Image (cartoon, rainbow, N blue to C red; front, side, top):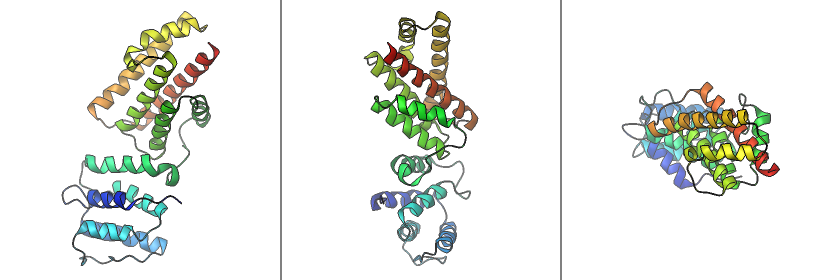
Length: 246
């Protein structure tokens, strides 16, 4: 089983035990007592006030007593703890994203209850020869399946589509500058004028939507992310199929 490195656990303890943006000592101990009881694990600091030097040490030493899969769950849930100062600090949100991106494949969820599973599987299949695009697509999927509905997910999805177009068109243009090429590509591969126009407009709007959230770091709406995810998946699947056909 993969291990979560001590360096990452230490970073998690620093973030979640931060004086201003982390959890209080009493909330840390209360949370770990619950995990220790449920998982039948002995922890060194189960009473508050504790005799550790600080909250970070308490959090780290308690965390180290659990198996990696439980460490993953604990860190993720502490990043979502209702007693965290509001609004939740960027450092906490970034910790959750890093956790999922690095260790989600091993310890996180691998399927979605809301996304069109068949579409996702087909898109993953068609992206198999475009590894850079596939890697970002899988990163976005992992974040979606772990309820990380933030601009970082949309950033991955947008870059995945951009890298796919760069690969197919053999150029280095940004996504918004690929729109004219899309029309030519679809037309030369047997697509109708109406389909070409619709496809270009939808990709353009999709790009602008994603770019708006990426630039402004806004919170995104789950239902909208699901729609954008499935639309982008459909774009990419059809683009690859057309490139092979052509």
